[in-house]
Length: 45
Image (cartoon, rainbow, N blue to C red; front, side, top):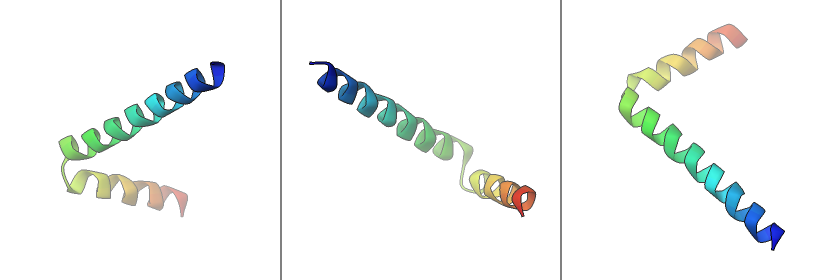
């Protein structure tokens, strides 16, 4: 019983993360994420 509940909670959390990420990319537009990726790469390299 507990394993099924934990699995459902994990899938629900993963779904929320994927939907929130996709929604933020759509709302931000096409150039915003590329700018952020470039900014992170510039700080990391």
